[in-house]
Length: 239
Image 1 (cartoon, rainbow, N blue to C red):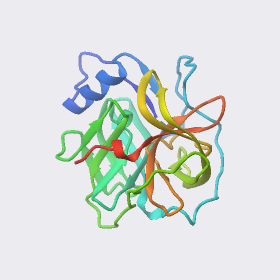
Image 2 (spheres, rainbow, N blue to C red):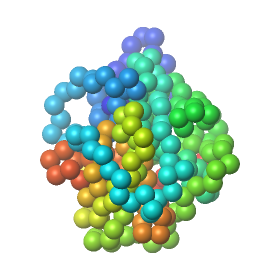
Image 3 (tube, rainbow, N blue to C red):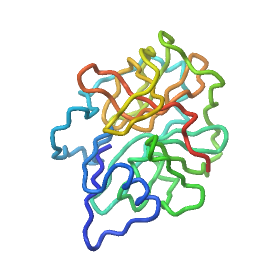
Image 4 (tube, one colour):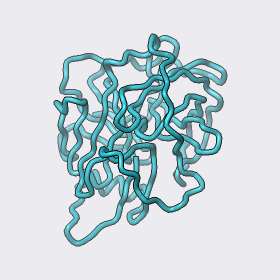
């Protein structure tokens, strides 16, 4: 998701916004895999570690991941609306990415926009050091189980997300790396690198193992190799 932290005299930041903004650096522009809801490209400075890829159409892996528990996320700010992905967990949380919240006044989850959140709502929690965010699930649809074991290099996984204004896509991939890493200048103690092809808008989407249990959250894609970057689900904040 493209996120601008530029501030002006009229801009208000909630505590959650200030926490995320401090982590990513106010005044910077960050691209993490979402697009404006109207599909209009935004002007961005060149960044060697920007995660973005051409649009791809994927259909594989639909039998691995339950599509009914993955939703489109729309962040509303004074700049307009931008889209990403969120997913429901069986423990009552909805997971997504923290960078989606920078400058956001409110967030809607689901194409029917039935779930609406303010950043000051009880239960909304962010972990900017891992680029993850949690919302309380106010629906009754259930959700994904959290995996009890993580996949290892070579294991098959599936990733899901909403590319721009398209329908949900699911792509099979393989774990090609797990260990320390860095994305957008933020050092992470533990990341997955996955061969799944993801696109702008997939940030916040789940990565599941062969049993359909969630193991990680997509935060972007490396532009040169086309591989996805994901943060282990253990770092998703509690409500």
